[in-house]
Length: 257
Image 1 (cartoon, one colour):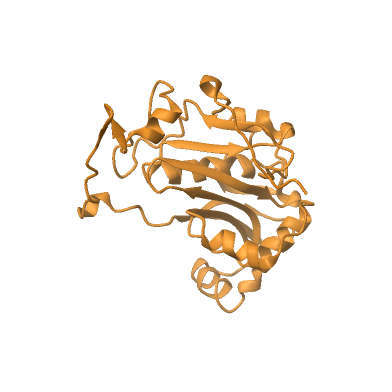
Image 2 (image 1 turned 120 degrees about the vertical axis):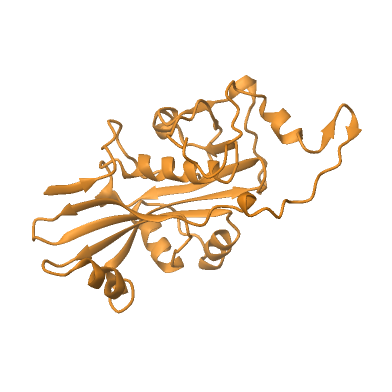
């Protein structure tokens, strides 16, 4: 397999099929020194440089010096509008049969619920009702995806993009997803990170999380959290997340039947 152009360097850490199944997980990971090269973001990111207090960030904008703070209405300045969803080719490579495969990252939330269920089956996650999967996608602040798009030898780029995305959309295969919930102001939590097992070990999981974080930072979300199973703690640690900063503990409530 010959790689034509890769915007992604393969991670030195193994990629797992991993998720955010809170049941059985008791570790909350918080960001620390996320340096993902977003210095050219559309507006200056107000991200804490010195592990600012997590709870102080939550409280800011509501209470100050024990007095009620007036919250200014949202700015109508066009510069304050949230960036549009991104979509770009992350990796392009030549397969053994001569076909060209592109791995496309998107933060636009283009996910078919049946494709997502099939991907969850591949990584061995328990089945969840389709109605709830659909609701989770609809109510997420951001849904980031990785799709595989294949082009046969001899087809030009214009044909690939127009035909494969419309007439032959079945060739566009969902191979990865991550989603985030948010208060749209200070905080976001990443959930349901998964990569097709046949595409693991190529650095795609690392790229998916990094691009998701970058997209959140571009929306001025400064506190990014997630819940990790024990086997993927080091994976997230190497992406800049820190377990329990300042002694903060993730706590869970669930029905006791």
